Image (cartoon, rainbow, N blue to C red; front, side, top):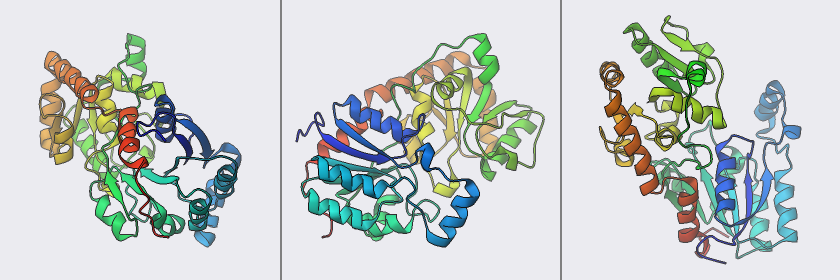
Length: 353
């Protein structure tokens, strides 16, 4: 097995739906030269209706409708793997990973999730039961290192959020695209009450803000300056929308206790200007006022939006510097995953027998 990540044989398990970040991570492994065998945890033919899924989950827990456990063991019986990559694999049973250890004792079981996996809304009984079999679990939540260890994972590493080089890149924006997707100030993301209140504060201050994302029908208090589009944008359309906004707002999900999020890196990677909630992790990723800018309150948010609307050249300089930081410090999935494979895939297993 090559420690560089090239020619590694990877059994990749995750929701590889087109446009999703799990698929982007799989593509990064392919870009690194890995031989990837994919197990899709959420194929269209295995998707249940929302009502059926909720009833079944309440009665029996998460259901492996895609036959993921059987697929893992079938692949393991036919081919030797260096890495079993589990990307938020909520339906994988502990018995499956125990059997994998028996079939392929030299295969490293690596886990990854961009979510807060200690939170009940993100994990499952299967996930908690199989944690002990990971060689290492990678989390983008700094506080998740200690929490996942307490839940039984023997080795946990913090890794920063990343962007996909194929998707998150500067795009030329014409007037038609700007009118269709962008504007002076925008936010792309799911509704939460806190961010909804901040958007309302901007709107009531006379600032028009355009919003793309799911769940915004829950925003009860509104203003004419809130342009809610009522749908999400993905893939190239997502990158084009980022490029079509002069100011891209980044709010952190309170339910996930975020200190940084995927948009924290995706927006600068697109060569776009980011104005985000101030955290130590954000400031470590991008220097304040030089590579991105930050706010602590609605009053500061309003003040900075007004300032940057009136200072386009400064805004463009900061956006370019943010893009350069992404490239210089290796924030792409390809470079992040290369580091993970290089440092951890060749190590001896630390899982419990």
